[in-house]
Every structure is written in structure tokens, then in C-alpha cells.
Length: 205
Image 1 (cartoon, helix red, strand yellow):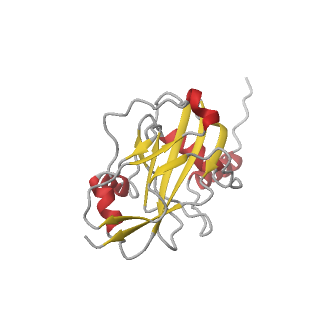
Image 2 (cartoon, rainbow, N blue to C red):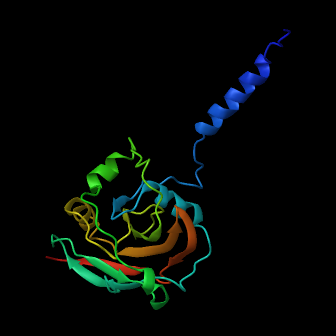
């Protein structure tokens, strides 16, 4: 049998290109933000699906109705974490049942630590259902200062997250919620966002 020797030069080029693609660094115009806290049945695969479509034009037609916080709501510095709640548009109510909460969710400290050592929530079943991405932004920031991805219709920040937000009491923060419907981790409806993000402030205790 006459077997040809592999083309080592071509093989080396292929390996180099593969390594380059895997180690590709984000550009200055595309900042990489940390993963959110996960709650309910949310997974990192669901989050990546939302990241892939987040640059679509603003569509508020299917945005959630944000009950709390209200526009301009003030919280006293040192106050306990509130519960923020929202509801689905009437057209989505038939399948808008809240999901069973997870036993645990990542705290702000864990989320912050995973900036350096991320841990993927892989090998979980593909997610199907409504998903909500709550992001809190400070003035002049591209990445959220706090965020959660949840399948539930409410979120109560944990103590660490709320304390970290309270440290920005000298400035107003904005709350944005992105809603989408996923089928096996694929966005089939949305994303929908609040036309005007809510502003929250801190007052003296």
C-alpha cells in the first residue's frame, strides 16, 4: 500500500488558525461583560441566545409591564433588598406561567469572581419558555453593574448585590428588562425591551 505522508505545512497552518480562533480577543468596540446571576430555570445557554440577538432594533411591542420599581423610585441607603416584579403582555398570558424557582442562585460575589474564573452551566436541558434579562446600569457604563437572567416574573437582589448597588448612591441607576421566548434555547419571539428603562435613586437613610 502506498500511503502519502500528510502535508505537515497545511496541518500546521490549520492548527494555528484553530488556536487563533479559540484565543481570539474581543475588540475595544465589543466589550465582554460578565455573565448574569441565574435564577429560576435560566441557563448560560439561554443567556448566550439573548446575547446573540441583543443588537436587534428596539422592539417594545411585547415588553413586560414593570410593576416595581416605579419610575424615579427612591430607596434608602441601607434598606433591605426589594422585590422587583413584572407581568407579561396580555397576548402572552396563556403560556406565561411562572417557573419553579431554583434551590440556589449565584450571589453577586460569585458573579464577580467569575470575571476571572467563569464556570459554565453546561449539560442542562435546552430551555423552552419565557426568559427575562434584568440589567441595572450606572451612568457612563456599557456593562451592567448588576444583572440576572430568570424564568420568573420577579427578582429580589441578594444582599451582596443590593449593597453593591447602594454604593452608587451618588448617581441614578437605570433598570432595563429584556424579554424573549425561547424554544430549545433558540429565540423564537423577541427580544422585547422597555421603551424607557426605569430610573432608581437612593435617599438618605
